[in-house]
Image (cartoon, rainbow, N blue to C red; front, side, top):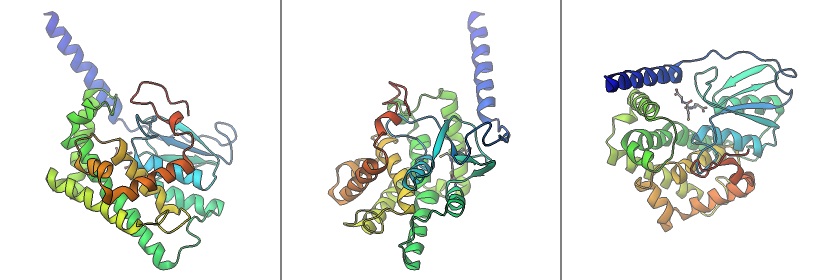
Length: 283
Ligand SMILES: N[C@@H](CCC(=O)N[C@@H](CS)C(=O)NCC(=O)O)C(=O)O
């Protein structure tokens, strides 16, 4: 009898948790200058990550861009999704925008930012191809490894402190979305190979350069950095590409590249991580 009540209570709590997690809250418009400071980007993103500032490549990409372009911003950490039902999203002077790439395009125009000013049209085309490679392709391989193929390793490695039922739901949704995309139809060994091939392509193009297009970082470095961080810090050690990235001489330039961007734009890195959820991130 006691056990029956316990199981019923667990089901009710779990179902309510899932309901709240899935519920898409409408974005409420707030007033700049009253509800938040004017001329400051309000960056809505997930809570800080265990070993890097975010478990989301897109949040790191956008925050790195804001730092690179010296745009004043304030973080709001949480799980509230934006106008496109995704995270990150921003509020800026009474306007609301979703999608990291569109947010960057909007801020570029509004604030006359141009991190790509020294690129030729050919380099811009290559930059776009690499941005799509990481944002629309490599991203899914990391997600599938983290939440679907190796979910139990992810839990064992304590990469998330979300309740198991929520992690199960994230896995279910990831699997469905990746299947609809098409990439989710590949087997785990195929996915591992794809991830390694994507990293190798970035490494081969980077070569001995400081950043993707030379001595100065450009916009695409923000995206690559965000995704590279996920492979380095936020997938379990059992992911082969992570082992290769850590140990192999052939990808060592990617590690140096990561260190360079981290030092230049994230001097406060330690304040922006939870150290495996052992402390609060203070920034
Ligand atoms: N194209 C979007 C992708 C953002 C994205 O996929 N965000 C994920 C987290 S990394 C998300 O919000 N997922 C929630 C969902 O799909 O329901 C961007 O560049 O911002």
